Length: 338
Image (cartoon, rainbow, N blue to C red):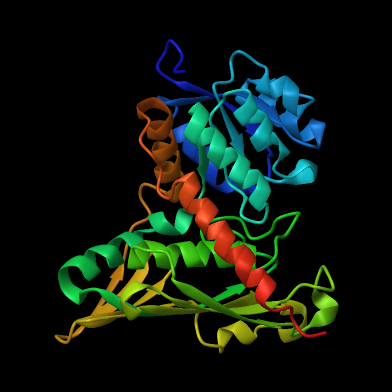
């Protein structure tokens, strides 16, 4: 799998903002382990320009990229027109896949890929960046040593033009997903990482605040999830679209985005990705944590170890499948009012 010079040769599908802001800079910094050898984009001229800059091949089709002998692994960074089809093609070709967009809204395809991973040794790693933010890592250390087991999470997230990956990722995507899928599934996964277990029960309240601003008549623009975890722990997550054209700069005086975490011996407040304030009864502590190495580096390092050392990612594809089933159940609970 690893080339003669010790590097994984990368084929990139989708040259959007996630490529520009997260993975292109990271793979450049990690040139001792990765080499981009081919790129594909639904706008071929964009692929040609990027290939000239990277001194690699521009491919006119997905199959052309996947069939290249100098492509060891495939990065899927935008849905574009083909959705998750290239993920399945890459798995069929036996090439490890890094997928940056959510597969949770396609349960059947996810089940197929989970089966391939278990029975054919395929590798698929999905991107869950919130798990790797400095504020998350510091919170988990505090819960273990200072604050004690978490009991309650209260979260508020606003998205402007579908901020799909939270800071420091991109702020827009061409094909937005339903809010329950993104960011809902990622926020629920973050709570799972903090509590160490999947929720035992879920409830949902969906709202349509500005129907005229929504991309589809059946979609909500504000969601609330209530989750009950083992041992009585709970999470209540509110997230929705911020309609700047209607509400202007109201975000400047509205309550800030973030997560309140209440534990047995103290409490914490997180603003992703790097700010954390906490107290265990002996005063207030505020920390601004460094984003070094960046989240892209942490994700790509994880994928490198998955491919070369067969270290299972967290969460696994089977874990993601369980999360996808929970999200499907939530979507079936209630439709937003007309």
